[in-house]
Length: 150
Image (cartoon, rainbow, N blue to C red):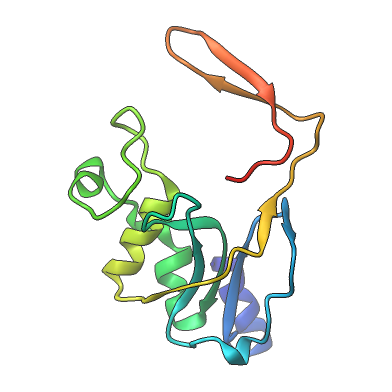
C-alpha cells in the first residue's frame, strides 16, 4: 500500500481501484469493465469450499477500502480474535491465522462489503516444482506442485 500511496503522490491523483493479483494466476476470461462493478464493495472470490471466507488470490478493491484490504499487517487478528470470529478456516495447530480469515475479519471491522467475483482464474505452477510441507518432529512431506485448485 505504501508504494501505491507514493505513486499517487507522484501523479497527484489517487487511483480509483487497486488489484490484488498473484503472479501465478491464469485467467480463463476477461475480468470485465470496472464501471460495471459496485464501487462500494471489495470484489473477491470465495474459497472453493463454498464456505464464507474470501479467496486471497485475487481481489478488485475500491480505493476507499484499500487500507482495510492491503494494510492488514497493521491489524492482524490474534488467535482469540480468530476463535471468536465468523471465519470458516480454523487456526492451523492453534497458531497460524489463515490469510482468508484475516482479510474477512479486517473487511468486516472496516465495514467494507464483499461482492462475490466469479472464479475465472486458477493457480498454475511449474510441473518441476516440488512442495515440501514441514510436519512435526522434523518430518516433512514432499510432492509435486503442478496445477492446484487452491
